[in-house]
Image (cartoon, rainbow over all chains, first blue to last red; front, side, top):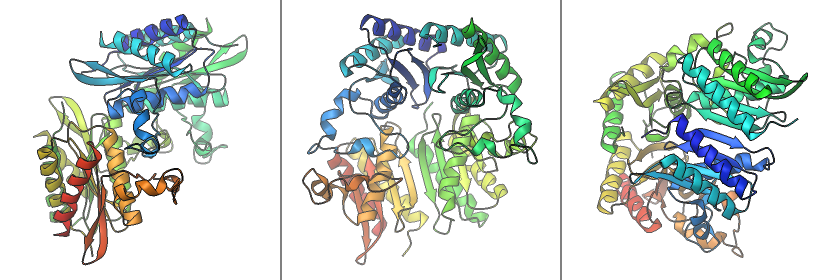
Length: 135
Length: 135
Length: 135
Length: 135
C-alpha cells in the first residue's frame, strides 16, 4: 500500500496546523514502508537540529514498528536492549518521543517523525500527521 | 529573508502540478540560504534515487549560486573545475540540470532541486517551484 | 508485493549454481522494493570487495529501476548524468554490469546485485537469480 | 578453515526453521573469521531494524570471540569496559543477546547474529545456525 503525494501533503499540513496550535516550531518528516523519505517540512523558526532528528525519528519508528518514546526504557543502562540506538551504521536511531508508525488495516505503511519542541509536543504533532495520512 | 512554511508548501504544490503536466514522476527538494532542507516531496512513482539526487541538486545550486546544469562544462576532464563535484566531505555535488537558486531582490534566498525525469524536465519543474517561492 | 524467504533462498541457490557453471566466485545480494537487504551469499573464493559491490549494485538497480550496465554511458564525461554515481550521501552507486531489477507483473519488486567476476558474468548470474525470484 | 557456501546455506536454513518454530520473524547474518559478511537472510515479517542489528551482532561476536549477551554486564555504567560498544569507527558493537561465535576444533571460524525477536529467541536461533555450520 503506497502513500500518495496528496496524502503526504495532507499529513504535513495537519502537522503544521497542530504545531501552530502548540506554538512548537517543528520539522516534520514522513517515510514510506521502506524507510525512504516521502515528505518533509521545516517551519521557519524550527531548530536546525530538527532536520536530522525528525528524519531519524521517522526512520526509527518504521525500523522497529514502534513509537520512539516506547523504545527509551529498553535501551537504558540495565535495560534489555542497552545501546541499540547505536547499532545502525549510517543512521543512528532516536529513542525519545516524536516518531510514530503510520498504521492502516493492521499494516505499518510508513512513519512520521517530528522534532523541534518538547517530546510530548513532537509526539502529539506526529500523531496528528499519521492520522491524517492513514485517513 | 526567510522562506515561510506556506511558501514551501506553495513551491512544492507548484512543482507537483508541473510534474503532472510533464508526466514526470519527481522528487522535489527545497533548501534555505544556509543549504539546510526546508521541504521535500516525493511522488509515488518517482525513482528512489530521486530522493538523494533532488536534495543534492538543491544543495549544489545554493552552494554555488548557480543552476546545476551550468556547472557541467566546468567539471569535465580538461575543464577548469575538474573534480569539484567531489570536493564536499559529506554531500557530493550534482552537475546536471534540475537544481536552481531561488532569487529575490537580487539575493539568493535558497534553492530547489528536482530529480526523477529528464534533466530538462527536472529543470523546468524546479524553475516553476522557485518562481512560486520567490513570489 | 513481498518477496518471501523461500524465494530469496531460491534466488541465491540459482545464482550459486550459475556462478559455479561460469567458474566465477561471487557475492550475491538481494534487496526489496525499499532497497533494504533481503538476502546475501558469498562464495568462499569470492573477492572481499564483492561484499560491498554486490550490495551497491542491488541498491543502484532498484534506485533507478535500471540494469546497472545501462547506466554506464550516461555518467561518462560528456554524458547527460556525469557524476551521478556520487550523488548519494551514504551509499555510492555502481554503474557497471551486475545489478538487475526484479520485475513481476510490470512492477519492480526488488533487485539483485552480483560481484566477483567479469561484469558480463556478474550480470548473467544476476539475471538467473532475478528470474528465479520473479518465478 | 573456511566456511563453504553450502554450509552458509545450511546455517541459514536451520535458523529459518528454528525462527518458524519460535514464531520469531528474524534476520540472520553470518560472518567469517575476518568479520566479513558470508550470508544473510531476512524473513518477510522481520523488523527492518533487524537488518542492521543482526549484522552488528555477528560482527561483535567475532570481534570479541564472545556471545554478545555476555558483553552486556561489562559495558554498563561502572563496568570495566564502559562505552566499549562505541569504540569501532564504522560498525557499532551490540551488547545484548543474539550474536554467537562459530567454534570448530577449538577455533572461532566465524559468527552468527540474529535479530527480530526477544534476545532469548534471537540467541536460540543463532545457536542453531552456529551448530549447523560447525557440523
